[in-house]
Structures are given as structure tokens and as C-alpha cells.
Length: 432
Image 1 (spheres, rainbow, N blue to C red):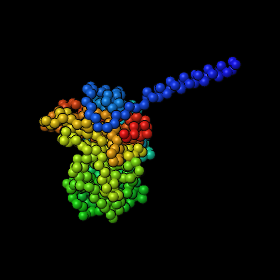
Image 2: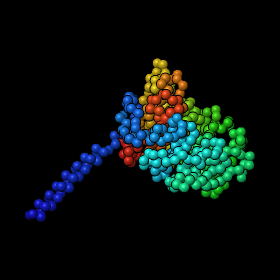
Image 3: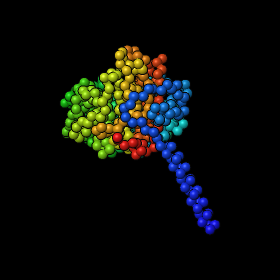
Image 4: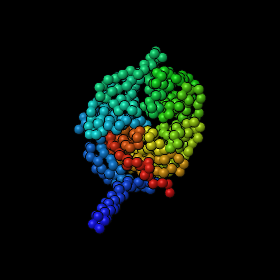
């Protein structure tokens, strides 16, 4: 009988312990905010560097990474390069940032301390466009005049990958114009080749594994070229033009092409659907929808209406870097603190939110940016306050620039990090 009582006591203890554990687990479940309800932006004082806080409306954790007086960066502000490229390395320990004066820095994501200025970028007539290696956390690739190079953050060693002067003796620069990226595995790269006057000589696709150019097109473009990029799979080279209304999608060897719908030549990014299809997600200027187009067929899917009827002062940027959590894209919006006369703020103003890449998508609200282009719509604007939010490749962190409503400098921003909840892809509420 004593043994049975002991067993009962143990069982009772286990049941009680399990019950309390379940209560704790339930309490720790993230409170997702979904949909298009409008929320008032909470008043939050300028955060201290390195001290995490919670977005009062959307419950994500945010931390300020940079501060000029502490970090001693040279320019008036600093942020991630652009929405379309991931600033974080493969294991989440390092961050590459661009000062708003064009100087680049390396940061430690464990301590949020500035490690060093990246001196390898001192030469070059175009932007260096650093792109992290997908497996080696201390290696990124960058452009220097006509060269594709790699850089080791531990040793400061810069290594030549390929000198395109060999193929283009009159060339001076290779570039994507900042808005482009390579394939996710860093095998295929597309570049504009320019001469010393920055005139276009050719658009090329380079295979890093085979160390050779596998596609080239030097004429027959529909307009002047604004940017070029590979898609995530490396199957397509995209060309964004200066003025025409569509994006041109070419096969890797330029033997075939399709045009995406009218209105697609706007801010956007490459992404993967949940099924693994390459798509371009963009603000369609012809329809005022956030839309996506299949790169194989050109078929467009409308995702979210942009409420310009409520507030015409909405700018959008897109980040589809999260290839390990496919089926979603990050959207960041920007505008003035006070909307135009007789208008009001919409549900999506100055925010970060995720959009599911399917018809009738779920919308997950992430954070307020507290970043404004100007006090009033008619004032001179701070271009760097557009946030340019970028999600990392693992879909766990977001980085964005914000002036936190400070208008004393038209060039001020600091960098903020948003931590997304663990396994958000599996825990997110299903569509109603």
C-alpha cells in the first residue's frame, strides 16, 4: 500500500507540473495581429541603443542597433543598404550597414557594437553591393569597378573571383544599380557593364561555379535600364527599365523573354511562393494593388489594395529575402507624419507587415516604423527615412532605418532590428 501511495504522489506531482507547464506555454504563445484594422501609432520616446522594447500594437520585439555618439560612424545617419538585399550573415552574428554618407560598417549582432569600417570598399566608382555567402558566415561578395570579389570579415582579406575586364576591355564598372541580387546560392549573377561615362555596354549573366559568362545581351532593350537582378533560383534575369511600365524577364542565356504586366515596373522584389515558384512582388502602378507575377508565365495575382484613396502619401518597399520561409513577403511603407490636406492616415501607413503570396492573402502586422519623410507632406523629405526594411534569409529578423520622428536633419536614421516569434510560419492563425 505504501508503494501505491508513493506512485500516486509521483503521478499527482507530474500532472500538476504538466498543468503548470502547459499554462506557461500557452502564456508564451505569440499574439499575432492579422488583417487591415487601423491602429493609432503609440507614442514611444527615442529608444536607447541595445535595449529591447515591445511594439504596443503588434507585440514584436524591437531593438535599436546603432547610435552615432556611441558608434562614431562618420555620416549623419546609417541603415541597411536596401529592402531587396539581406544585411545579415548566414548565422545571424554579423550585420553590414551603409552610412548615409556612403561609408560601410560591420556590426556584431550579439553585442550590437560596431566592429569596424569596411576599408575594402574604398575603391570603386559604383556601389559595392555586398552580398553574404549562404553558408560561410565570415564571407561576403562585393563589386569593385570591373571585379567581383569576396571579403573575409575575420582577416580583411579580399580575393578576386572574376575580372570582367577580360571580356570587356573598355568596361569600367559592373553593377546591378543596388536593386539587384544573385541567385540564392550565389552561383548566378547578373550585371550591367558600364564604361567610364557610366554608359551601358552590355547586360550579362555570370556563373560563379563555372567561372564564365553564360548569357549576354548588348542591344535591343526596350528602354534605358534602371536595374538588373537574378531571381532566387537563378533561372531568370530581370530588367527594370527607366520609364516603360513593365518588367522584362529573360531566360538565363537571354534566348527567351516575357514581359510582366503593365504597372509592374515599380518598387518590388523577388520572392518564392510556398510551392517554390519564382515570383516578382510589386506595387502595380496601373491598378494600385500589391501584386505578384509568375516569372515563367507572367500571370499576375492581385494581393492587397493600396488605399491611396484615403492617403495618397504612401510609399512602399518590398523584401522577399526569406527563402527558408517561402510564401511570404515583407512590406514597409513610408510617408509624412501629417497626411496631405483633407486626407488621413490609412491602416498601412509607416508600418512593417507581411503578406502571404496567394490570392486573398493573410496579412500579418509586424511593427510601426516611427519613421517619417517629413513633418508635413509639403516639406522637404528625408529619403533615408523610407525605412527600406529587409528581412533575413531565415525569416527570423527584420532590419530597418528610422528617424523616429526627428526632423532636425534630412539625412538622419538609425538602424532597428525586429525579432519575429519562433516558428511563426507554423503558429500563425489560419485564414478565417
